[in-house]
Image (cartoon, rainbow, N blue to C red; front, side, top):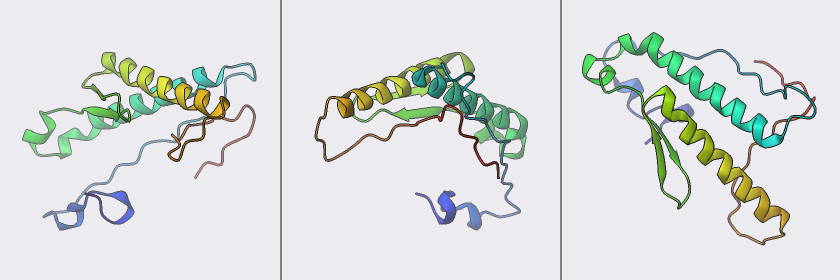
Length: 134
């Protein structure tokens, strides 16, 4: 369950002073105008996963020991094809491949003119459009 701002519902009920960590911005610009969209999306998603793992390594010491010892697990809910999980850097490639495959399938269905009531969101990375950094 999530509460205000998408944070865990119990975050504000925890004793002590909760620590909220935000990582640096990740550039989503294409490396070149000729870069394939799938390659660009996969590259940005890979950087995102690496940044989350880095934050975990840097700040997991603030968590209770029993929580930190469990480690960080990413679960990609692939929408009916089964969940893909990753517990370490080397297995993140499975998540990236599952995400890219779902984006390709959604784009192919959209390109084929398939009328679907439930559309799968895709991530589009602009070729030369600068992103506003907050």
